[in-house]
Length: 225
Image (cartoon, rainbow, N blue to C red; front, side, top):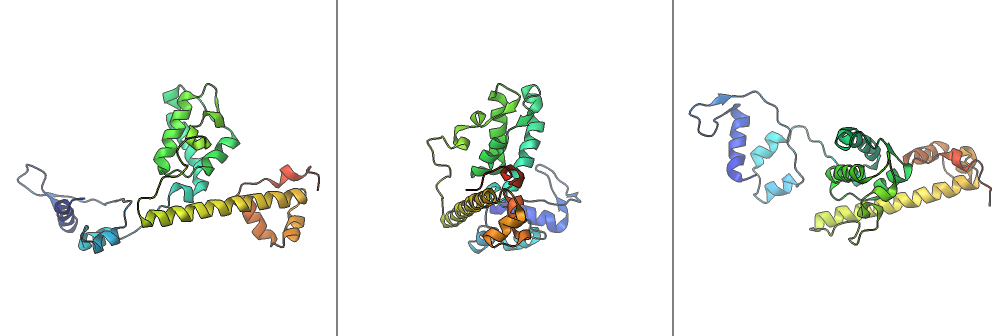
């Protein structure tokens, strides 16, 4: 936002009045503002790019929304929403999505966040030939088959720090998932035996199983090796 506009917005917020372009009289307003930014406004204030008085006027209730890759549990809900939202555009299809597709969607880092996810779902709905989305219907980059890296090159130190943290968390999640599956396989899905086997509290184990959406039932008939 240009500094000149910042002054006008601040004046309108403080006086609850503004004058429209070309107008001759001020208009009283009764509004609530919801603002959004992908920048660090405190840093912008320190750099003289954003007015401090406007910042504190706006900074009443602050909600930090992490990048999509940091809240993978939202992906299934968002996918369902986008399928419902766009089904009229594709003549009511598809309505189903496979578990492997959700796994692929949760693995991809989504540098474009929710907007990129929505575009990917719409593209897939338009191109698939059946009433069920499969992995092969997804864009190549989501399947991990694109020529470009699965994540963009960071533009500054803050983005580098954030992306390194994301990659570290992704690696830790994958290690946890493999660890849990192997432990459950050894103990044929028995929660109590698995907890005792790996030296973990039963409740903690159950929380990790829920986190990674693993079903212990699938290991009941697994032969112990």
